[in-house]
Image 1 (cartoon, rainbow, N blue to C red):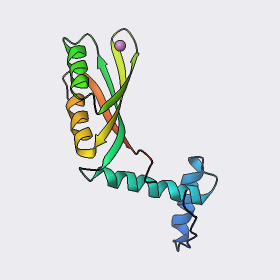
Image 2: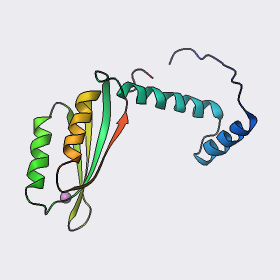
Image 3: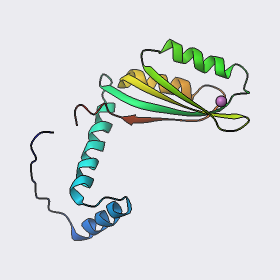
Length: 138
Ligand code: NI
């Protein structure tokens, strides 16, 4: 971590009250860590908007494994993008439904395209790409 800088922020009293209430409900014990997390979150979001940024994320999928050829299609796609899909967690939720979490890494553009392709596959009931960061820049 680089050296700490201290800043003063002028903020409307009512807005600050709402902020304090929000961060308390989320478990923060001080404003500084909450501010830092908000800034980091914006920086991560911003990185994802640049197609060539190096990014990390997870794709969460829920699907019915009885749908014809769906398992094969999903596995084929994961092999096609083995350099971007680093790991897969599979949970058999019940008799029919499976949950998969894929860890993805690559350029923002590439990772988003892969996620959209997988999530839009027929038979996938719900899917979401969660964006995060390698943490190097933060
Ligand atoms: Ni399963």
